[in-house]
Image (cartoon, rainbow, N blue to C red; front, side, top):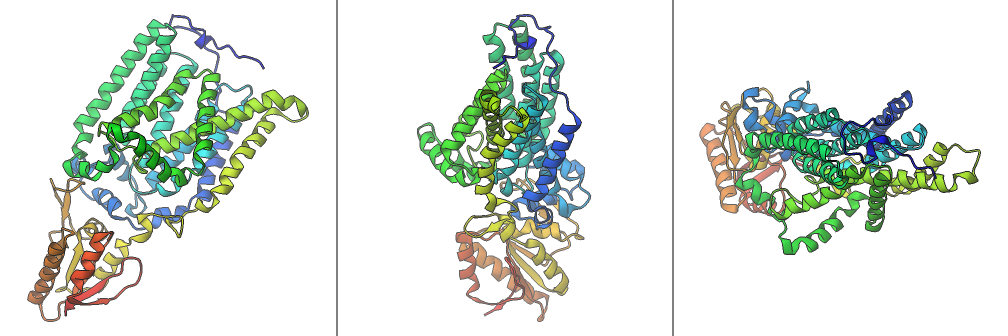
Length: 538
């Protein structure tokens, strides 16, 4: 086995070393990336992603694009402000999920660059490594459920791309590359809060690696770059992002903040819950992650390997401190995707080792072809075993379902708009309000802020005095809301009707509504997952 000695990592203490050139993009790279992006259309049900109605946690995000740009610091709420701005660039508000889908594509491309950027013996084997890394990311079952209109796919793309950049910085040390990494952190923080987790891991890994080599000038450069990045992250968080943190939000995420003594049991429970969305047994996952980390070290990327190791440590620390939800499917999506990318590196590393050790037994076969065959043997069972996940439409009986598949406030809003009379009344639960306001496309809206829910703001429709929103989920509030709607209809005329619209009814709220409606005549007028009904006195 031939050892590759790279001048950038000889261990000299000066900062001006001449590095061997890294892999440069070729036509074959472009072709590989194009195929991977096309596979997104094969693996995912893109039509459903782009056309399904928004559910409650998406509806307020979609509604935010209808407010003036000056309201963006308020309406962005818990979403990064850059993410909310990007949504405004989509021409059709019904297709806003094109943004999370685009970041999903960026994560796949980033994973390819991650695998490709390591120092492989030949360009062909580098391309195989990039494809292997990207394929594991593409096939990860968790990717099938993260199409909602939130920044979680951006979190994943940012995490992978920052690892690519630290890998690139290690390949040929320069202040310019550190500057690019710092600039990337600044941009990433605008679209992903996770940047505040990944950036310390990246710069901390670089700092520890250079310090262990006694490369003191580089230590100073990394410290300065990390300090600049930290200032930027703090400025964005304190100036903008922290506005989305409120008491209601903290109560909502309370179960995702384990205490120090609860951590071990909590992690065990969360790993068990997430296992189906990882798509492989725990021992296989652990083995692939170890192989990926070792491969990074063998390919002379110790800082990248250390950053990978630091990520779960920092995430766990923040979870225990009550600062960021730990291993929650949505907010920790970036950890799952990053783990998939590292596992892909592990697959490529095992394939490369197998070719190096045993390739001479097949002298007529090209090493890249052999490496590709080994990768196919390792990834193939993973793809087949998770085949039931692919082209997931949001609701697969016995497998999983998402809120996208079991809510449809759009149809309800459009039906009522088409059939209600001018003196009719519409009553709805609180979860339907954002979606109703969004899909009432021609109605003027006004921002109501601050507001005491997790979003921090609400919306008013000044021309819709016919709407009664039941703001609570308890029996007293629901009964009062129904009574108010019926009485309002009585004042608006003998022929006035009361339309009932509800969305995202879950748990006890569903039972409360059923009991409250038992005192009225209820006539269902539409079918579907969230039917519209007419309510009148019993």
